[in-house]
Amino acid sequence: MDLEGNSLGLGRKPALVLVDIINGFTDPDCPLGVECPEVVAANNELLAAFHSRGLPVYLTTVVYYSNDQARVFRDRIPALDLLTPGSRWVQLDSRLAVRDGDTVIEKQWASAFHRTDLDQRLRESGVDSLVITGLTTSGCVRATVVDALQYDYSVVLATEAVADRNPDAHSANLFDLNAKYADVMSLSQVLAQLPLPGAA
Image (cartoon, rainbow, N blue to C red):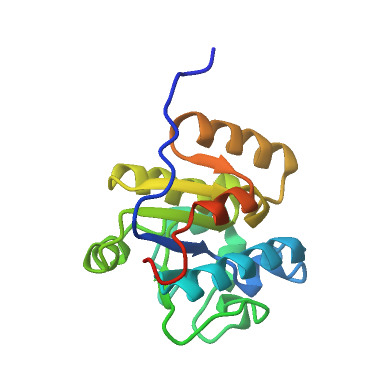
């Protein structure tokens, strides 16, 4: 039985949060990676839309500086040990149309909020809602969406801008996130919800 819920959409000042669109997750040569050029392309459409409106953009990467950071997480997924400072795997995918004013957040756990200053940065920028995208739907994207709700942000996901290594997990998590935590919609629907350029 599905829960009844309300679609909240975006507020007056949304921010874009791109979760872990880094080489380690977009290059299949890395054990953590999956080929997803269509996801990178969809995120570039969102980047262009947010840039043209002067809206905040945040991108996350995963970097481990010491063996004791996120030890249990890394014990479960040993390939995470590849995400070390200076490694090409922690660098943003070069196909992303990132601008100088965009903010990169380093994290060690699944959620972009956990033990980072993301919430503080969002509050200081007056952000009231989020478009969350990236990799992977069932992992870091889901964790970030759930935490965003717990920090009282309404959240929208663009289906074309997220992906997962497992298609079944991708579909199941989009269904569940839409039922309880976020508005899941097409990229064109998300773009239509953004304020007009110059109105932000």
